[in-house]
Image (cartoon, rainbow, N blue to C red; front, side, top):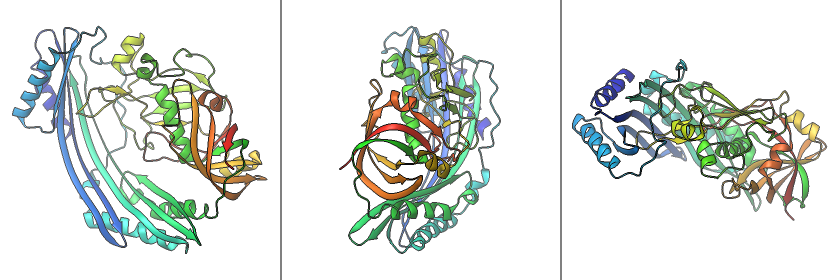
Length: 447
């Protein structure tokens, strides 16, 4: 299948004119989404998409066009439109396609052809099973707002006049649920999920138990007193936090003056326990992939090593402007030009699981969820403030539930105040993995 996509790219690239650089991105995917409510299918969607994106660079000008079809006539029109768009573009001396850099494309075990053979009925049964498991998990669960199953198979190819000719494919699926718990007049919510490459990889019971636990343990929650405390981030919260840090390490953000780390390469920016890695070659990562959006081989990039900032992530354009090499961090679909982003972030894990970390903390707050995270963070100044809920840590144990409070600091100080990284790494349906994270001296604003 991928060879067919490569041949499509070959045919279009062969039409490049003298002085033109041409890049062709071809993609094809199928997906299924199921939602059940009270044992019945509430939503069911199955989709197949295919398309092509063509980028033409000529005379320091770039044109781009795409189409959601692999019809030969449509693809010819897309190439002509990209050429035409280039004539109206602004000159940019840094424009240029990615070029082969000698890094071999890794052979990753990411694709499960048999996923396409799984019946829709089996997928519905998984969502129904999940809903039943959540309702049975605790008598205080009064409703299941969502019990979902979703999957996808995708393949893509990149062919360029600069010599790139690569293809990749992957499959993924997950179940997720969102439930409501009630005790008297108090109502709380919780969520849970499980991810894999095939339905048999999914742990429905674990997803249900996680959702029930998150909801019921917050019943009776009160506001904490304001003060400065040690905070333990739950793995899901840490994953969101890493996403924020990763966005500030983008070469694009640096060039646009939107990164607080712009002039700090080689400097210590975090505690020694903090090693941040972007590794799309790790098959455990939900967002793993063999190549990036420009067809370069995926690779392991250590961004912060033992607290020291080692590199930013780049695509071909930002690398060229910055006087460095691409880190294979071009992100895009066939309908867009390449941008820059971290692809599969994780922290090098520590040695202790969350219970051991709580004992070492003694007294503090476990933050189990946050709200308004992206709007509450300034990537230039580093100011950090977000709503949160969680549980009090008392004498090394989880105690009473807390809600309606704010945690605040700066990204710079939080990174410097990282005291420990847990061993409980969780692979989540996002571009970052979760792990328990201990951070000293955050301001908690409550009652």
